[in-house]
Length: 101
Image (cartoon, rainbow, N blue to C red; front, side, top):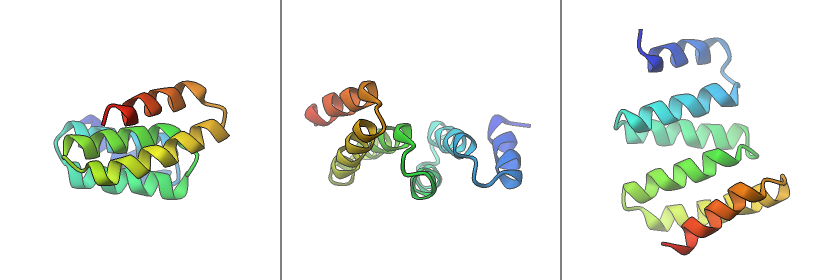
């Protein structure tokens, strides 16, 4: 059984687990299934809007897909969330990434 299949099975049992949803999104992105990865990232951020890593990873995926227009506001939101939740490191990384676009 692949890692993705394992994550899908676990997520079927625990559909609101943010770590499982994030892991599945990352797995799909690594497998080149970008549309599915985006769906999982968006579901993650909809259900868990304080999951800071989701903003950064989705924005990076969008940049790889040449969608800077969607990535920029996502990074801005992620930076605000990171600052609000006290994750200054993530805020700094996203700010630097945003500045490079």
